[in-house]
Length: 169
Image (tube, rainbow, N blue to C red):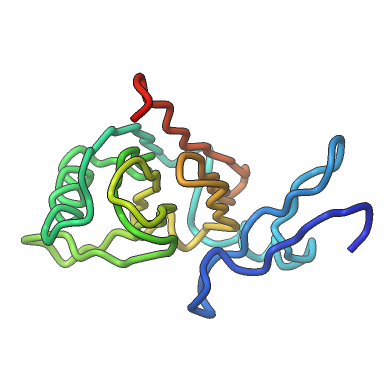
């Protein structure tokens, strides 16, 4: 470790296929994905974000997510609206991680990256279509209220999801 920098290797405690997280580096130092430059260039070659492909990004305060079937409803709505990436707040899911969700009445799947804690309130996450999941370079659950996801293509996009409640509990 140099200058007190911290670099985490994985977004969750389990799973070898999880996207590496962004590291916290001190002031004035760029965040990193934990990958070498040539590895990141290979990710950019995967289908993902390009200037010629339509990309729909949405923000949704879902107020749910931990009960059976609720994630599938979110995935179905994303598919019907042709949303590629949704930043979700108030997910109310425990822990941090990644889940693949089958879209009801379809052969498609969506992937949910989420950041939570021990209680079923607050929490944020991202739900992505399979076309975008292949190009995820990093996911960092900063806290139960903040998460960042980086998606590569011909351009790299960093999307933040921040939950700021209007009232404190």
